[in-house]
Length: 112
Length: 117
Image (cartoon, rainbow over all chains, first blue to last red):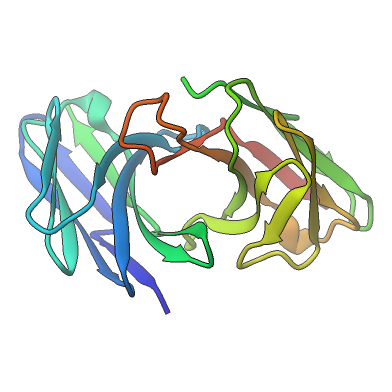
């Protein structure tokens, strides 16, 4: 069974205090790993897709990396507006459709 | 912006009543999905569609049905709502390479908060 585990469940940082969020996964035949940001009362907002171990992608203060068993979302010098829940999801090919399994998220709070 | 709207955005209903949620997209995406999101669970797939009148079940499809008579609309119906179906429902489309990303990502609508009393 495909599994996605995110840690920590919640993280509180001071503004400017860099840290990393973890997404570990157990799947058969990874086709892609996605990171999303979700603000309260809104739908998930796409951030990154990673396809193979060693791949990295960056966007402003966020950097996503991928290994064969986990992905990290590094947040450099976060600001209060980075406060949100960050979701990780993995895609496997399955019966010709895109099966995507989501983790339960890491709730990030950045304190001014 | 993936051009996805959901209606209604909020709904309160009573156990046993039928409920239909609507997802509308404006960019001719082939694949559409319905998820539910509950505390302690990741987003879970209810049903998906891969074209007009082509639909299939996801992992939590019991008690739900869907229909897609037009490319732009994907309807989710709760035939007889139960309290366990109280949740936030999200519609998503699969990127057809017109949006940011590499072409495999799903983009989500704003959600419908459903409460079944």
